[in-house]
Image 1 (cartoon, rainbow, N blue to C red):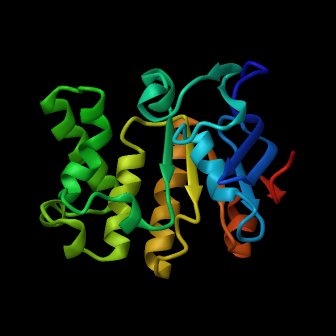
Image 2 (cartoon, rainbow, N blue to C red):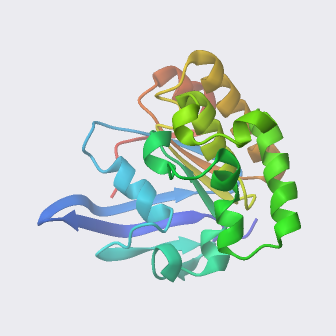
Length: 221
């Protein structure tokens, strides 16, 4: 592994309406490791996840992939960079377009980079099987499924590009015990197969102790 391998936030600052949410934060996730991050509500954990996921551009500092700075956010970020990072949020309802079927939800990131239709169909079927979603569920929209089923679809979407890094922001907090276990098993399986680096943001002490290789108490600067 080259010394620069990893997903990093370097000296990142983010402010909203004059209030600083992140102040020169620096975090690194290396390939294959699970970094646990915990801290009080409002300390900027979710904002850090959005910055690392290339969904929000910081006012100061930058994100790098394998030592190379990544400019822009959302569709202004290079496709080659943003497809290497998956993200799973706490609330599947907030992360899912209510107009889409679960199949279309999973297909979103593949269609965004213009994958061939047949490849998209095959990959959606593969991901649905991994996530434990049956064909009848794939035809439903978010309002017609449970939170757990919808979070499984969001997990499948996050894994669509076989990301090198997966960011989990309290991703199991709203789930029952069996769904929590399933989501954790799917993520762990992907990590072992592809050497994925995982950032695990959670308030669950048992989960972070069991899963994380390294634990950060609050956001380091």
